[in-house]
Image 1 (spheres, one colour):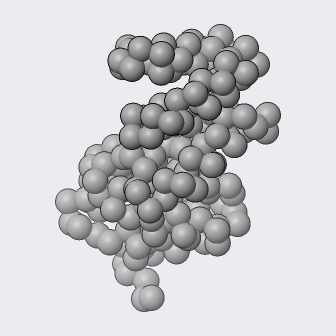
Image 2: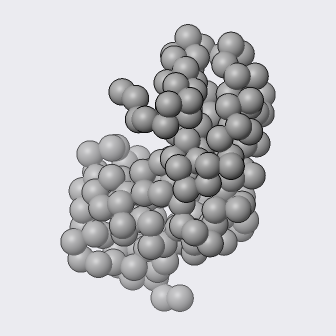
Image 3: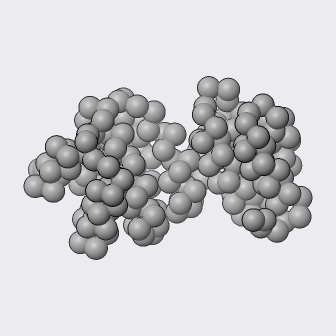
Length: 180
């Protein structure tokens, strides 16, 4: 795959980029229909390039969730090659922003349950995971009981804010209605 000028400019600028720059790049990628697959080798670069590109992917999803959604199955395959950081954890946010592609649902459900239950996963990833799982229970109601048991077990192990998020999701699971 030949590297475009845009790819090269991202590779150079990402390590010192800020959120505002990444949002502008996200808009450029979306508006110019730049193929994210052509940029995905940035995930194989050194840590600052790779991690900030993963943040840029979230920004792309914020700008246009469908653009991110379309490339998620490809990125999920690529995730096994990323060694600079734990790229798989980024999917909790990607799935929260744009949804879980059907072809990734089985693996996603396993990962999300693992992340919610793991003592080694930070609260941000846990929170995103529980919201994604809550959404998946609408499609797969048979997961509701397992998620409820899991959340009740995890509820008091972390911060007060996390407990509030868990309580909100538990109420949603119990009533079937979205809570604010």
